[in-house]
Image (tube, rainbow, N blue to C red; front, side):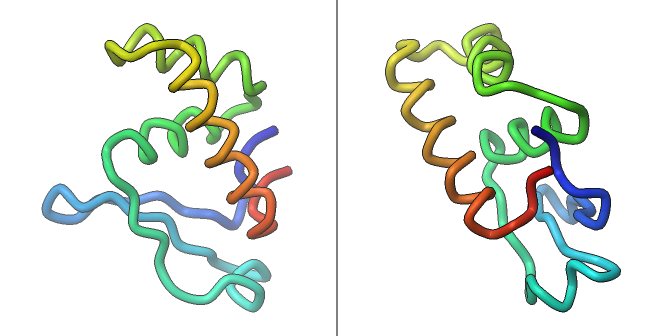
Length: 87
């Protein structure tokens, strides 16, 4: 899975966000505000990823239990999928 090509990531004054452009902007209106952790996942999703590859990358970056990370990643992926922004 990865972000659809019409999803653009940005950061202004330390505030991370994602916006839909092109055809996606008709489905997804507004801005998705991301904290640092969500932005890390969005950055990973600029290229093809699996749930396991995201969990692995997060385990390398964050000092948190794998079960907690896996639960959070699954929740974020489900949310992004329900928004229709994942390929």
